[in-house]
Image (cartoon, rainbow, N blue to C red; front, side, top):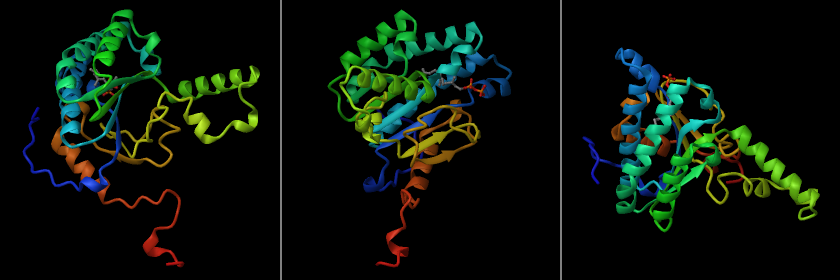
Length: 253
Ligand code: FPP
């Protein structure tokens, strides 16, 4: 499963992020720069998805979440949405063998029920086929929006209170986490956004509370394993305090 990497990987296995999430942005600009239509950018972007999934597995990342289609993306022109769904279906089918071979489990976060039925069917087949794989979890965020996710969680909790399954006093941060699509998953340690935009765009807003954020200028179709490794090295140098004081600088020793 070797991907094309020219550099030797010198990452400390002890400080690898458990969960990396990526906002894959810049397919349209990539195509524009090359005087191609946007769909060509998405096609090249899907190839980058395949190589980064392989790279993440090779680098021993336990969980990779990719923002592949947002709740807002439904408002793009019909032809673009159709092309994205077609590429998604192609990806899910073509990756089956590699996911199985590489011990990767596929999961979806988002409104899976809003996707075209044929895409849902292929997703279900691949998720069922890979359900026992345990080296990496690949989360595809599809028809995903953080505000929708939180709103749905609040509605579910309100319903349970109405049915007296829960009491308002039972509402804790953990209870809210348990009603999100990412239930039982660690928060992302690192969120990468390509194409130089400095925003989260409705992605994992609750879960990103203490995520390290890395923005690179590379347009998604040009994103490579080598750049991924450099970003992981940068992550490993960061001092994560989670709102506390670093041990070495605190007065109480
Ligand atoms: C953003 O580029 C990209 C997306 C809409 C999501 C990512 C989609 C892919 C990588 C292709 C298909 C996905 C899979 C999983 C096979 P953009 O169109 O917003 O770029 P722009 O900001 O330059 O216009």
